[in-house]
Image 1 (cartoon, protein in one colour):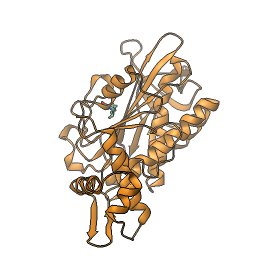
Image 2 (tube, helix red, strand yellow):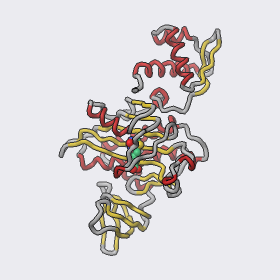
Image 3 (cartoon, helix red, strand yellow):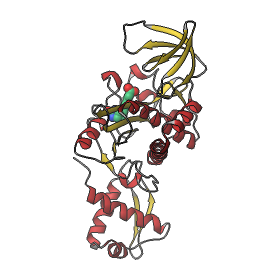
Image 4 (cartoon, protein in one colour):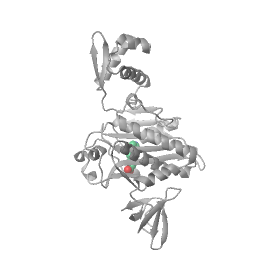
Length: 332
Ligand code: BTN
């Protein structure tokens, strides 16, 4: 079942009117008039909104007033106060889906535009890197994918992963939380992973058809709610903050930072993403152990991580000289 765009449009209009009214009441008749629909239609939508957790009080003479909104990722909540140029101008919401990356791929193949966001409350088949599965329980995280259609070369696409890690780190900072990024894109706090990012691409030799950045943010998951095998590796933002985090507001912050970084990339390349990445990096300056992602070969080696280069590769100084690591597992 896909969220109906037309219903979403009316709902968001009703919510916008109620929000605009602030503490004062707004009559059903007034709303109907302003939206060009019947009073019954307004009433039906109000009932629906209440069922979805909106606390809308009514007063027989003066009308309706919005007291509080539920913790939902529905587009009408996300778009409420979202300021972006490209990312999130179109948002597809699913209460449940196999994987937002898979859905984004399907939509991209049907011509979905640059910046379209797919978000779900729950994923039945959340996908991680290296064919792993990704824990994505209902209502407790932000599981989303962004479709990008940039005009740069396919070899630049992997750097988009850094964009997402930096955007989440900045959003965390906005909410008063400190996180670090472990190369290339693990967002960590206290050594535990808060975010998973999976970037996929469809391209020809010289042209990108689309890039999909899939990001899974553990927002309000309690330690004991993680499956046992993840408990010592994964954490959520609410654990850091010590309280529940409003997902819609957090998501908006992430999308706004992504949008600003993407805009900078399109205008002047990845320099800003790299400098922001360096600011959050917990890898640079450390002695690291690298395990070659391609396996076989020379296997693991140890050195000091000194910087990333213009390809996003990690530069590691070893006893035998400087090595450039494009993909691999890093332990500090
Ligand atoms: C990893 O850490 O291995 C990457 C995990 C990526 C998870 C996100 S959740 C949203 C999007 N949809 C998916 O199926 N995967 C990504």
